Length: 383
Image 1 (cartoon, rainbow, N blue to C red):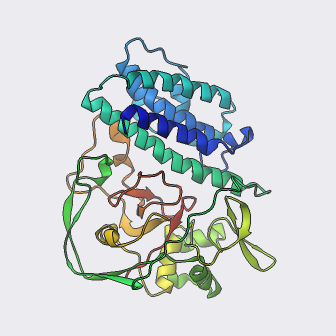
Image 2 (cartoon, rainbow, N blue to C red; image 1 turned 30 degrees about the horizontal axis):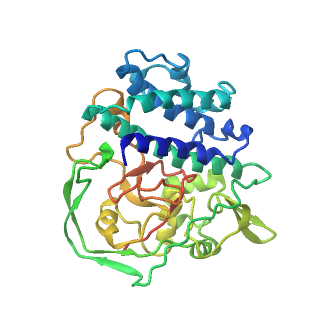
Image 3 (tube, rainbow, N blue to C red; image 1 turned 60 degrees about the vertical axis):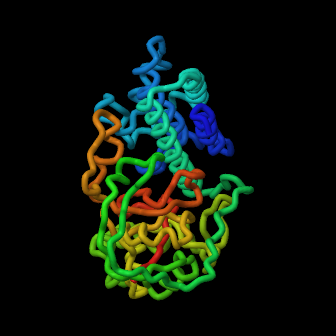
């Protein structure tokens, strides 16, 4: 697909995701980790204006000088910004203003893309599109959190169905021999800098589950007192359970003795066959300990992934988010994209039902703090 056409497809998808929303839904920020939908729409537009149009189009006129302050996320080198916790206080700019902003920037970008760009600018456009696809996934996870914490549990889209659980007809465990495995991205396509450099790791013999843990299996953990027995938890995880009074996955509610969970269609009975979702790293490791198993490392996951069905849930691994050997940050603001977050976070692999088409790959490294579970996270066991 030509870069100009790809730009149009990706940009339109963000607005399509927001189409079922009411105007009021665009502004809500229930917790610090969730950004208002209109902020996502503005921030992804700011990326193209800031890194492509302003430096490279001599006669470009900035849409609004205040928007750099409003829509900068974490780029220290680009200037001051609204702190993350205050994004929900931005009643202005209005949704209609942000839509005009998108239209204005898109018109300028499409004009820019009518001409053959140098390789470095083409790469920057591709990065911007992948950045927007990341925010499309965040848009859906944030929208679900916003609506799932509305006391009325309103449906986002009654026609949208959850991803079907992958059906695996083979053995329950995939045996992987010990040996040297190559890890990291290799090829001429796009990847994020944290997927490089490709390197070799030695892995002991191991087995990895061919299926994700289901809701029914997780209910067994709950019924067995999994949330009340400290033996299965890291000390930090046990503190989290007690302080937050966690008793079930996010969005689960016990109603008249029956477990319900918030879905795209509103509050529904928990589907026992579906892969468990919205699980923290703490919960994933506790479940694994209860089963007498463990989580795979990110290297074990990547080595086995070509033989697995993945992409329904982001899968927690037992690996801390660290740089690969030879990793270097790019100069300037783009170098702030991944490297500075390589501390106190855990790696997730795969993808989820809200990952944009063709966005993820076997070498993709997602990362979150171990207590977070508003993403579409699940569990795959290893031994």
